[in-house]
Amino acid sequence: MYHPAMERIPCVIMRGGTSKGIFLKGNDLPCDPAKRDAVILSIFGSPDTRQIDGLGGADPLTSKLAIINRSNRPDADVEYTFGQVDIHSAFVDYSSNCGNISSGVGPFAITEGLVQAQQPVTTVRIYNTNTDKVFIAEVPVDDKGPQEVGEYKIHGVPGTGARIGLNMAGTIGAKTGRLLPTGNPIDTIQIDGFGPLTVSMLDAGSPMVFVRAQDLGLVGTESPNEIDSDPKMLELLEHIRCIAAEKMGIADRATAHEKVRAVPMVAFVSKPQAYRGYTDGKRIEPSEIDFVSRDMFMGIMHKTYSGTATVCTGCAAMTPGTVVQQLMGDKGDDYTVRIGHPSGIIECNVTRENGRIVRAVFGRTARRIMEGYVYVPRTVLD
Image 1 (tube, rainbow, N blue to C red):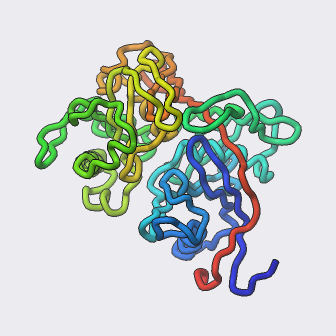
Image 2: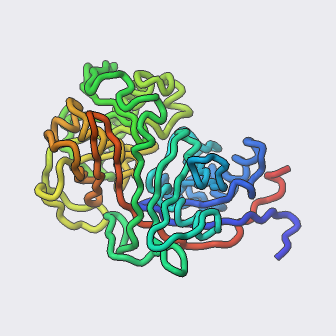
Image 3: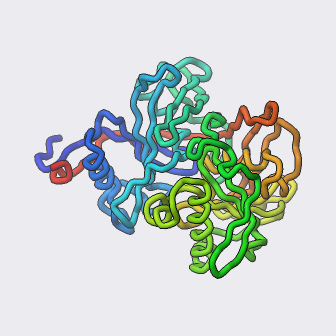
């Protein structure tokens, strides 16, 4: 249907892991970065608390973007750019990747004809422009394309689906150049009005800073509602994040607070303990997990756990001397790390060879929800 005042753009809405995003082909967007971002903001309905005039879901976990094209690189099949679309300001953050949305890239690429399907599992090599790294997606397929129905359960998503394996060992050091940006498994940072704090800073999947929950006066099993309604704790966690950003060489404190909002993520960790899942109320037993972790994302607590955070947390748990490894203990060179998050459990299989991490795999599911056209006012392009 022709709309003289509107530009229509091919669009797919996909759930990837515990997030939901808008998937677009790069060739369908303006080449000029400013015009491209203006179009993206219009698609999502940002800035607006409800994102009522766009496709955004008024939550950081549903205000996510994937831009995908066929790749010209010999080591990759597709090129993928992740964008975190801010809800409250006219800003798209391209500073990091998203592991959950990444799980939708392989199925999208196969369905759109960018990658030829190979039964029973199609390996898709994905070059992520945010991190300048390649990671691997293993997508189950049948004669109709990517499988979505299966028995694999991820906590935070109703039902089950077909398991997609994501190996993100290739993203280690993507932002800072190495797994331990400061060279140390543990550092002490000084926080005004609080004092010294022991942290571990790592870069795999996405840069993260880990702190013991008890050092913040927390139990570790707090729910998103408890943390998000505590302005003093949110302020403290943001201070930690911005100081870590500076220590890791990502950005100075002011820039981290104003512009580089997605990374590093802050996680507070604690010993295995029982708690109720945030989304379904089911009891998580201490015997089911190696430790408890709560991941802060875009200023609030993640209701489940970020995919890239899963990779970084798994690597932290398998790196001697970090606050995470101290909680879990030494598990050898090949172990599936079990992380207790607000809504359940997520696992990351990590393999080390000669002290170096060579494999970091976690499982996700993905589903194509809608395909069609999204309409953008021509005034945005003009």
